[in-house]
Amino acid sequence: MPPHWDSLHGRRAPLTTILLMLVLVVVAAPPAIDARVRVGVYIGPGPLWWPPYPYGWYPGPYHYGYPPVVIVEPPAVYIERPPAPPQYWYYCAPSQTYYPYVQTCTEPWIKVPASRP
Image (cartoon, rainbow, N blue to C red):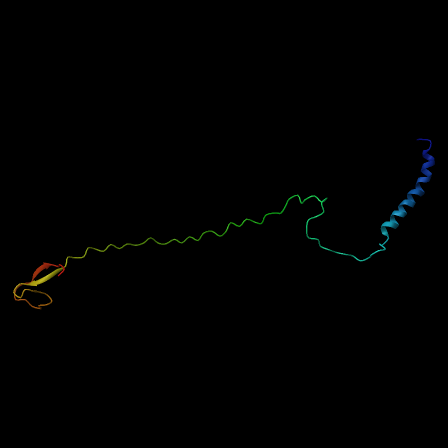
């Protein structure tokens, strides 16, 4: 040990005690200016010495939208009609007229393919 250690060690304990008590008095003493608690909200950019928020703003969740509406229509049903049977006019030779203008004929009716008059 150094020779002056014994002399400093004896004076160090009271000095440490005094400093400790002074710190406790300063820290534990209530503020003399204003004892009220103030709460405030600041909205805006921080001071210039604050670093920016490291992650930035998180984007909102991605909305994929609703699935498209699928309407399944049954296939069209086509009904093919059979060809129309040939139409005939019935001719009465003795009276030279067609049915229904003449209801009876003395000879057999003559089947004639229909045509536009």
